[in-house]
Image 1 (spheres, protein in one colour):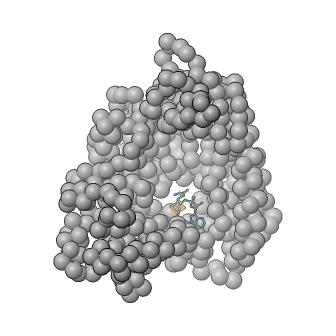
Image 2 (cartoon, rainbow, N blue to C red):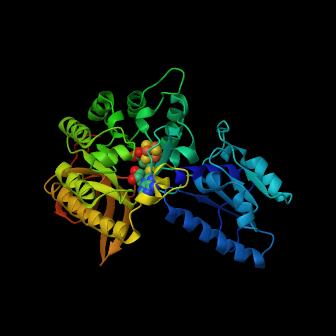
Image 3 (cartoon, rainbow, N blue to C red):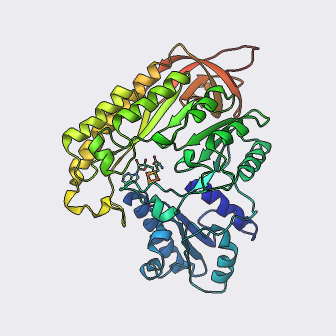
Length: 432
Ligand code: SAH
Ligand code: SF4
């Protein structure tokens, strides 16, 4: 979501004669921050420190901070970083033109709101390549006890069906081959809109658009995935067979303490339902190690869940206390840092094994691969891309170009990628 916001910020700035440049030449520096964990927050502050030093040599440069850390810390940052010129929150992006004018006149500005400014028509300067982000909604209403997102991004707000579809059309016209729909809980899409379009409806409409492209989406909240969504993905041509469904913990008491609205059995049923309906589907997840009060036994339930459910890949993190969140206040129940790190290591080892097992399952299958990179290695031309079910695939090819869809028969499984051979065929590729 941050990357997508940055593309919008760059787009807005381009209307005011700014263009991307190196740190040596830039006269405006903005760090777009994430505060999901303390580590990401610290990275942002260290960036500001570097730019502060630069300003001693080049006093004319302007320095700004935006995103979730800005939203959370507000004007406190002006005191903390005396060289800071601009602070704007997650709801203020479309106010940027006015804010830039103010700092140009020498004002120090802190613009934070609790509700979003309406979207306006500006360019979007998307990252190079063939993958495009497309936010379908912002914010979150779930209030998981460890999570800062509802406080920094506010309540759920969906973009209208027409807005999303028109943006998708424009992305396709620009030649992108893969669109990733973004939302904290994509299955909540449309619930706040007047005509209540569902996420299933949005997927259905996007699948009907003309062109050679793929659609992915993230993130799915386990119990909110509807039968209609599963049905649409099953029958669609362009929607990839891949669900990212964060489980967070494999233990029922911890899930409750996290305010996740499902238990292990319900999560397992959802995974089974998706697998029963959608061939070759990949299911990925997120897990937190060392949530306050988590016992060793409860942590081991997470490890057993990954194995039992055969999850293909998972993002992992040690629990990081976040300001204002209920879990962040359970100070007497915090797990020691060393112990969190130990658990995280076990978790990572388990994810690694699970990924290898999942990749081994691919051997012998033929996948449609969208080529993302070409590189030369030992005199050989290698193509790298991703299968519809989101596996990284490497194969030799003298002809493949970035953006091509190519059928590849898999013959080797490594931990984080699979390898195969191009299948020459005149038949239509994959199930696209
Ligand atoms: N909306 C998504 C998750 C968004 S945040 C969902 O509900 O599934 C991305 C991931 O960051 C979460 O899934 C969680 O695993 C992790 N995360 C969030 N807050 C965290 C914290 N305080 N400490 C460690 N990990 C955290
Ligand atoms: Fe955070 Fe929970 Fe919302 Fe995901 S669903 S963004 S983890 S509060």
